[in-house]
Amino acid sequence: MHDEVIFPASGPIRLTRLAKAIGEGEITAQNVVQECLARIIARDPAIGAFAAIQHVPQWRNGPLLGIPIGVKDIFDTHDLPTEYGSAIFAGHRPSVDAAIVAMLRRAGAAIIGKTVTTEFAFLHPAATRNPLNLAHTPGGSSSGSAAAVAAGMVLAAIGTQTGGSIIRPASYCGIAGYKPSFRLLPTTGMKTFSWSLDTAGFFAATVADVAFLAAAVTGRPLALEPAHSRFTFGVLQQAVHHEADNEMLAALERAAQALSRAGHAVQRMAEPAEWGAARNAHSTLQDFEAALALGDELDRFPDMLSDRLRTTLEAGRAISPADFDTARRTARLARKASPAVFDGIDALLTPSAPGAAPFGLASTGDSKFNKLFTLLGLPAMNVPGLNAQNGLPLGMQVIAPFGRDGLALQAANALESALRSADHAS
Image (tube, rainbow, N blue to C red):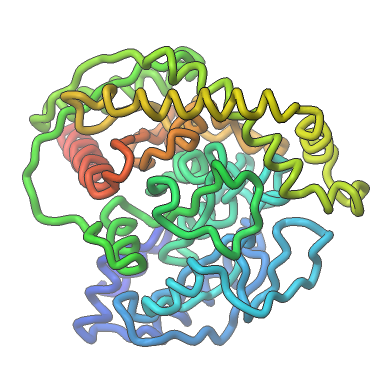
């Protein structure tokens, strides 16, 4: 039935397919909003992806056509509570929207609710569960955004990444996640953790859906074009490469083979020494800035912070300005080394995470495969399409040169298509 194509019984909803149906008059935006609200009411009690719901969302004319979007509760919203995942801000109601939320509204999005974030978008887990297996984490800190999209409760959501908080949850939940080039999307009106690293981005079902959303919100030429380009991928042997589990490493090989069969060039390459040093500098940058950004919370409300965050902030205060400046210089050298890595390479291919979503909710997973590219400011995409033996997703990360976000999306789409073709062939 037509409705089953637009609204699958389970799993994420294709944004591009539904936008086409609305544009052609096959379904109304009001119908879509009501369907998403019904799904939230039915499914979210078990998943816990939403911190607040807008039961009668409003929207303007625009390319997003009233499509329901979730907003990570680290962004200010004038018409919904904004609590940043912390009891310190219980009931907080900003007067204005964050810049990215205002951009979504101007593009015609229906802001249907605030999605759960970990405490101040750090590591202390929230209660959100992975919709593919409720006994497993959805990842963090954009746990609610990824879970809401994966469960088909919204068509897309916005999140943030300071270490790996877009790519990793997208990997764990089996959807597309896009971390743009640094500062391509504004972070004004977002609760800051680390101003040198915090990056806003998007979740949706597939790469094409993310690209459609990014183009609609930014006005940039990011939507996928019908092209048959052949790309050169570099399978990056990072210093942490063998910290991925065997299933993830095997999945990486399957992805490389699928690309080769689809006509793309694949070659192996090692990371430069400057990148390895920068990976180690990430926590110094992050923790020093977090101790300043959340300094008043630490001073005035220490007992309302999790032990993990309070300890991190106290350690951040112990970092000297000289050590912070050294870390900044290390990061700058790594960024200068980045263009040479892409000589003859369109995009890099790495695991999105060490493995599938860990069991339990005590941890949101590890960002060791993501934080370097956040620090470098490079555009990165999680590409779904592979699974572990337990059925949980194993995402692949595609990274492009700084400012080449269109290329990142096109290359990620090429990988997604290659994986789909390989799956059909098998």
